[in-house]
Image (cartoon, rainbow, N blue to C red; front, side, top):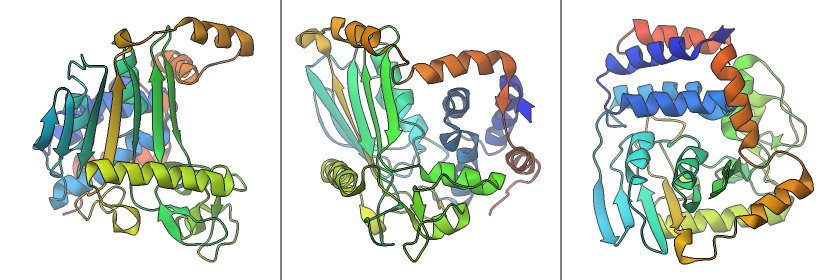
Length: 322
């Protein structure tokens, strides 16, 4: 089915209002932007575990956090089970007037797609790198042992339009597997294994098993190092100890790190972006999403019937989970 942006905004707004959730405009904007840009794995379906956590009390409906350390524009934050999208949208409003600033957060709920934040920074003329961890979903190659999350990574460079890389370092994202299961679709070959370590295209078996890293063992160690750095700087849990991201029956204890670079202190060589864009003659990271966004704003957003029915149920039954 195709749903208009206005209709989606209306039903999400009603669901959040009925539960007195702070920052609903930010949540609505984030989830719809994900859908508009083709990031459906981080779009409307993320509302369901968020509402579950709010109703169960594992996620706070208000913004409540502690600044544990600060110097200049750099911060260490305890999110205290706040809604991650609301907290991070607040934190990126910092001035970032130093050569480099770092914000590390632990214990906030799922923050959505990282490119949402890095693109906003790039439109302010700031370069940025953002990464984090979550519950384990990725296996050590050759085994069925889930060790790492999908290791989301976003890098943005100011230009016109901005260069915004936003990807999981796994062969696919867990959100896309959940989406495939809901839609009754198969996975692409070579992205997941079952709980015996055998390749599978069945999303249900993949959720019981695990996702493969991008690039084999090299990709695994790149993911491992980023997740170690995320935990090292934020103080978050790591590996099998991470809770509360997808299964929000538990409070969140994962972490994210944002590095913001003010290019006014450096060369700001925008010519390199222009040269490579002309050389390869194809869309740069982030441009496909912007082009898709234009079409979906006028044509509407594709949504499967199961997900739409879940939204209707969340609107009609309060509480739904508690």
